[in-house]
Length: 69
Length: 195
Image 1 (cartoon, rainbow over the protein chains, first blue to last red):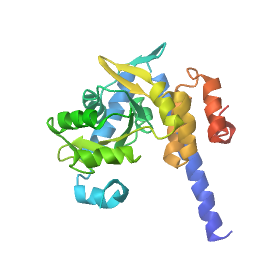
Image 2: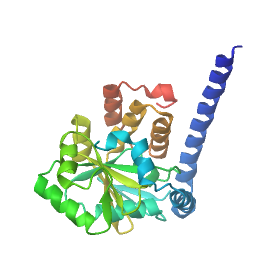
Image 3: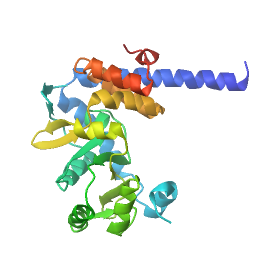
Image 4: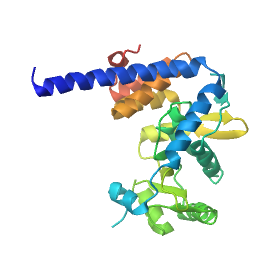
């Protein structure tokens, strides 16, 4: 099997596994109390925001379409 | 998940993240028609993922009304990332571009505002659903258009968002409206293991 085919097979498997997890997680949220899932979600999102890069110049470089020259 | 669907309203409670608080706080300044679309909707309903921005479609308005909104925000600790000039920001909206606003000295998260660009944006604006979280209220696009639209966008993140919303609300969706939008967008649910 060629390198591309091996990588493609692995990529497709990864996509399948991720989608299965998303569907598992939707069921987890559906079947658990709001306090349980929302506490986990809040901890996760707050820590992401705490470590977000607030460098305006970097943001301008990575979102060039948003800014007038 | 404890959640109630009453007519056009979705009522539930959750522990609010800093992202939720930022959105709710900013919506207080919007005394015009708006609708939240895209990635924040699955996040609002529990999907654990990050986002840089929250997409909001706002009704078309005059420059005077936009200036009033701009002034209220900039005097309350917000900044617009694209330009400091309100005329230039308004021009961007009118030309179909989006503009971003955030709390001062903050880049992420930000809110991306745009005027409706097509019949689907107009549908979302006219057919929004009210979400009530504790004493807070916000307007989101109907899930029957959001799910097919996310499949249509087609990135893995968008497909995952669509799958999440579909599975979470499968028994609450109006399937005939959903299928009509799927047809419009050329989406086959079977391809994603849904029916």
